[in-house]
Image 1: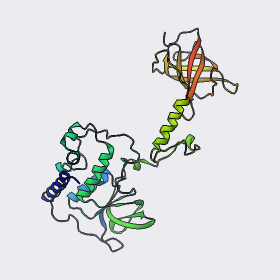
Image 2: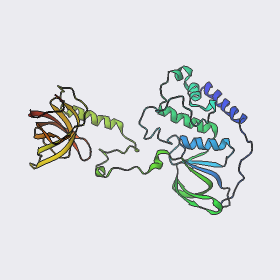
Image 3: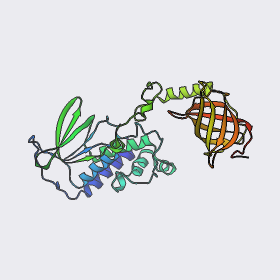
Image 4: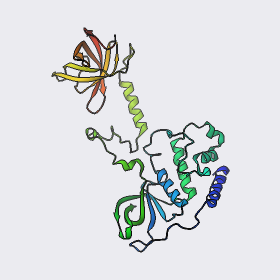
Length: 329
C-alpha cells in the first residue's frame, strides 16, 4: 500500500471519529425467537447500494447489522461479472457511497492510488477501478459482509421481527432482523432467461449475458466468419431508410410466396430487408412499394443473405429491372 493511501485511511478514521454523533447505539437490543439478539437490519446485496446503506446506518449508530452477498469477495455487483462496458457512464466527479465525506470520495481514493495528475487526465472511471474502490470503502469504514451467502426466503416472525432463511456452504440457517433491505440491484428485476426460440441452441453458439463469456473464442469465431464470408463491394451509397415493401416470388422449396417486408437501408439500385421466407441466392422477386397503395417497382435479384433474428433472414437485393418509381431516383 502506498504512503498516500495509508495517509488517506488515517484521515478517514480521524474524520469518522470526529463526526460520530450520536456516540451511543440508537437502538436497544431485541432478542429473537432463538434467544439471540436479533439484527437491527439485514442487508441483502453487498454492491454499491448495499455498502452505502450499511454505511449510512452505521453513521446513525445502527451498528447491529449484517450484509450478505451470494458472490465471492470482490465479485459483488456487475462490475467484474456481466458489466461489459470498459468504464462507468456517469461523470467521474459524481459522488456516491461516500455519503458526502470528502476523504471517502472516489476522487480522493484515485488520487491517493495514482496521483492528482492521473485524476486530472482521467475521462470516465474504469469499471474495474470502481470495483476496487468499493472494496476499499467497505473495508476502511468497517462494513461487515458475509460472502457466499444467499437469501432463500423471508417470512414473518414473532414480535414483529422478520425471519430470513439463508444458505452458505450448503448449510441453511435462519437470521432474525427488525428490518431487511433488498439491495440486489438489477438482479431483483427478475430471473435471467433465454428467449424461447433460442433455447434449443447448444452452449457452443449461445451465451447468456449474465454468465461468463469466452471472448477469445468469440473473437476467433467472428474472425473465421469474416474470412469465409464473401466480400461484396458497395458500388453505391446506402441510405438507412425504412420503406414498406411487398415481395412476391418462389422460395427455396419451389413454393410461391408473398410477404410484407420493411427495408433496413436502400440504394439507387437495391435494398436490404428482413424476410421470413427462405430464398436462394440469385433467385428473383417482384418488388412493390406499399406505403400508399401497392406500386410495382420491378424485379430484384437476391445477392446475399444472413440471419437478422430468430425468425428472420435479411437479404441484400439488387434490381435487375425497374419499370416503376423507386424511393431513390
